[in-house]
Image 1 (cartoon, helix red, strand yellow):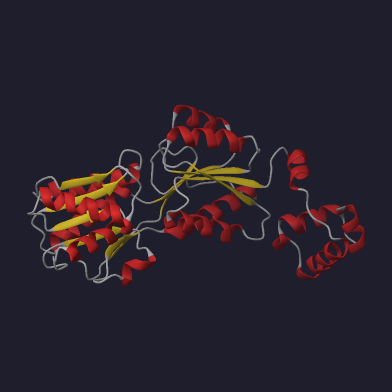
Image 2 (spheres, helix red, strand yellow):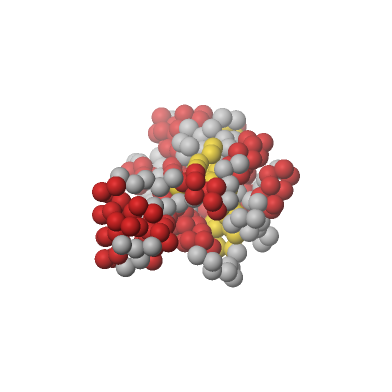
Amino acid sequence: MADVARLAGVSPATVSRALREPHAVSPPMRARIDAAVDRLSYRRNLMAGGLASARSMTIGVIIPSMTNAFFAATIDGMEAGLAGTGYQLLIGNSRYGEDTEERLIASLLAWSPAAIVVTGCRHSRGALRMLLDAKIPVVEMWELSDRPIDTVVGFSQHAAGAAAARHLIDRGATRLGFVGALLGSDYRAGDRRAGFRAAAAAAGFAPPAEAHMAEQATAVGGAKALSQLMDAHPDVDAVLCSNDVMALGAIFEAQRRGWPIPHRLKLCGFGDMDFAAATEPALTTLRPPRRAIGARIAEILRERFEGTQATQTVFDLGFELVVRGST
C-alpha cells in the first residue's frame, strides 16, 4: 500500500480509504490510485487488514436453504447493496436446523466478521448467547420481532397467511385446505399456516383440512400432498400451499384428476417464483420482498460501518397478494 501511495503521490491513508470506500475519494484521485494499483499488480491482503483492525472485511450470512430462490434473491440484493465497499459475504446453510445454525455462528465468529445476518428470529440458547456477546451488528431477516437481538428486516408471515385465507373466502371458498412441507422445522411456513387458520376461524370457517410432507418442498411433494388432502377431504374447494413449488405440483395433480381451476379448486402459493405467472392457469400467490430485504440489510450495515447510530431496529417491508387465474 505504501508503494501504491508513493506512485500515486498520495498518503497511505488515502489509498486505504479509496480501496475501502471508493465513493469517499474524488474521481480524479481514485483514477490515480487505480492506475498505480494496476501498474504494481497490488492486491489487498484482507487477512492482514483483519488482524490490524481485529475485524475482517467479511459479513457472515446464514440462510436455511441454498436451493430456495427466495434466499438467493435476498443474497443478490445484499451483494448489490454492498458493491464497492470491500466487504465480502461468507454464506452458511443451516438446512432449517437450529443446531446447525449454532455451529455455523460459532464458525463464522471465528473469522471475526464485521457483522452477522441470520434468517429468522428463533435461535438455540447457545446461538442467542453468541450473537448477543458478539459486539457486532446482528441482523435477523425474513420475519418480524418486537424484541430483535439487534435489528430485524422482514414482514409478518402470520399476516401473509391470513391474507391468503381472506382472499380465498372472498372468492367464494366454502372449505379451506392447507398443504405444506417441513413444517416441523420451517417455522416461517408454520406461521403462515397459523395466520391462515386464524383468519378462517375469524370468518366462522371450520379449521382448514391439512396435508404435510416431511421432506423439502418439491412439485412432486405438492402433488402428493394435494392428493392426500383431497382423498381425505373431498369437500375442500380452496387450498393455500406453503410455497409456489408445492402449488405447482398441486396444479399438476388437479389437472391430472380433471379438476378445473379455479372453478372446482382454488389454489394459492407463496413466493411469486418466476414460473408462477406462466402456469396454466397463472398462479395466485403471496409475493415477499425477497430482494428488498437484502438491499435494506446492505443499507443498514453500510450506515453502521460508517458510524451512524441506529434509531430504528424493526423494518417491516410488507408483502403483496398477487391475484391471478388460479383463484
